[in-house]
Image 1 (cartoon, chains in turn brown, purple):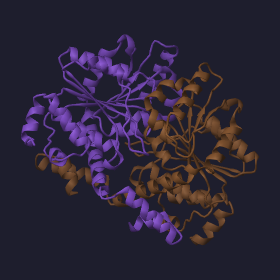
Image 2 (image 1 turned 180 degrees about the vertical axis):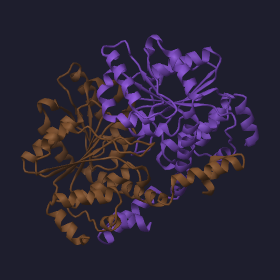
Image 3 (image 1 turned 90 degrees about the vertical axis):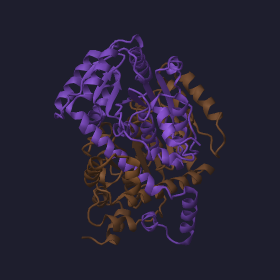
Image 4 (image 1 turned 180 degrees about the horizontal axis):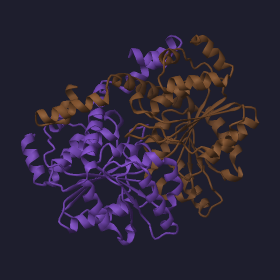
Length: 300
Length: 300
């Protein structure tokens, strides 16, 4: 087994094999994973950019276009693509990341899909750990992509220093529905497929919504893109950069750190719970007497 | 303060004010909430039906049509509509439930929107508790509606005895993307807006997908509806009923119980954590020395 100092040195020099192996160790909680995590320091302060939005909004296409820009400018980018969880068999899903495959041979780009495996903690806890491993490597920017809207979206806001919410012009109703939730999550709005009908009206409404919310040291910009023709990509990069220098960025970083700590404490406090054993105990309790799950949980 | 036995009696007789007040007590963790939860027994075994699917799939319209059928048949229905969480200020969102407003004066129908309030535990934990309160009332069926796809969807599967996944013909790509995840969640597929182009092909593909998955004592039916014209609603009700009598239903109930217990234990173990205090401690730790969040969480 390689010494941790050696692993960290290789990662900081961008050794792809070492980076990939370190992620595997952390993802699967193999021997030495705890020691590795205990040795990580966020000295490089690599910015973490989260991308979220409903399926079909063109997240992968947009991220693809951004990667190309970053890489073209000589920047090293790591992408973590998060797959939806399977609650029943705790299996891994094969993410459809084919649209990012053009970058597989680009030495500036590192892409990894992750999915939860039940007993090893939730998706968010694993993502936190993998982000920290990647921060020890020599990347200039880390990108997290989530599929879906709802809970995952909220959780990405507790992971990423800058959260980009990607919408399409047809999303009018959804935005109406999740108004304040989405407003508090989004540091940048991107309306993709902005060449479609109704894009102008939607952009206007979103602008109004943004300005109707209280100041937080940063007015969430509303950007129009057409990722498939790489239109508007440069402005997305500029606004990510601008957010990184805004007053709200440090507050956000501090919030992210708090959420991370909370999740890790939760993971630690639940690590002794074995679901198979818990299941047996519940079955036994049900047979023994009138069952009340709150009393059961309270005494566990 | 009313005695708990009196509260339970009134609830079992369908006293709407008592039901609403009990939910408020539990939702806001007011005086007596723990005693109330400790007094609940699932003797009535009211079936819990979860509805999930992407925004725009027509969940509310479909649920609306189902409520009308149930109520028309003299059944008492409670609906819990779950709003997306706001992670920053822990505020409540005003859900857009106007489409259900036609039932507001129907004595057979009880509708309640809920949203999380950070410190009082996550959305899932609150939903668990409110479901159990409603089970103590005299409803024939409980309906849970979530907005979104992703994590929430997965969590609903750990709450509902029968999960109905609502899709639209345009969802082809999404289903491809989340294949096994969605297959494991869905007890029933409903393809709504099935009068649209491409519905036939999508239904066929979904049928093939369903049959390519291993037997679990229940073959997930694929149903076509057009909720807006109330087409196919009766069949949805029949299949919900059929799932309730299937071999997979008891397995599912057992899984739901396990997930509930896990969540409640987690809530209990985290209840001493005050995020404001935690934040201060992190800030202090960062100033004191080189900060490693894993060591910090490990010693907390």
